Image (cartoon, rainbow, N blue to C red; front, side):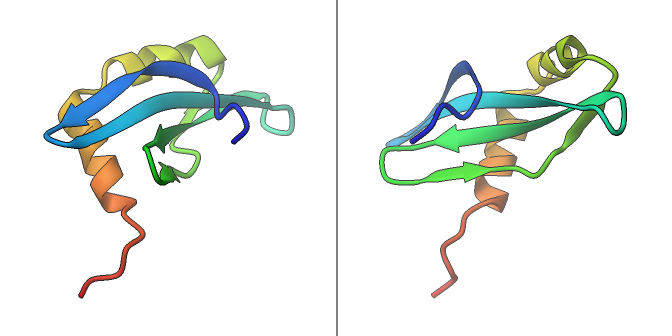
Amino acid sequence: MNDPGRYMGDLKRGDEHWYVYLETFHDSDLGAARGRVHFVGATESRNTSWIFLEWQEDEITERFAKMSPLELWSFVEALDRRKPD
């Protein structure tokens, strides 16, 4: 797997473990930066769409740092690609 962005830490609950990465991209058409979050687990990975839009990449990092583990778990669960039984 290619580097999905900057490593931001781990997310653990019970037997579940995700490595969390923040990807940023400077969109020259907008003159702003975009950001999305990648969750990399032992057998799968998940990522958000471009959920951050700020003037500078540093501002995206600051906004991400304010997110709680509960908010990150909400993303992981919402991104679960498994179909219900």
